[in-house]
Length: 194
Image (cartoon, rainbow, N blue to C red; front, side):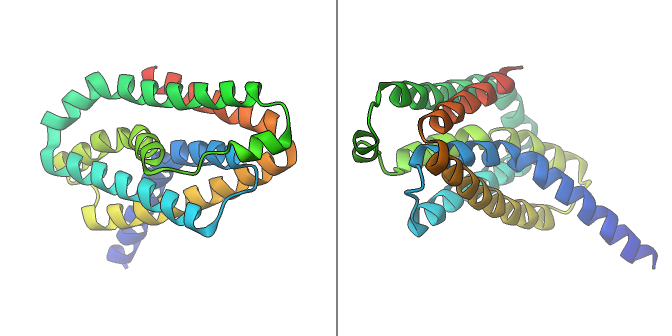
């Protein structure tokens, strides 16, 4: 009975940790969805989920394996990298939304989700996973395999949910939703500095 209680306590801690790691990804995927104005395809969901999940798992694993060395570097430079990437993408979204005048022009100029944009955004959202992985490796407080698995599942769910919610908002409110998405990215970037 004691072991079962212990398992559920560990699982609860892992779930809370996973949710805290994927909140930025949820917000960013909502911004991406808003930018796409309901034009998301199944492939876009799959690519986005794969990039964000892969990056979260890679960063968490890197922090776990490389410990304090990588964590110390990321704590100094990571927030600035995250801020720069998110500010660039968020600023581009706002500028793009403000320049567009008609729905046809907007849909015709809609860029596809490229590997470059997904790599930059998923990297920016995953930097804090290095510090989490490092603390897991050093403290041994949570089982690494279970943590990585739960983080992977939570990331997939957050990205798909965020894209769907953002896409619905973008389809309904178009330009205001895209501007709001860009502003959200800017605020997440600023939050990473603070």
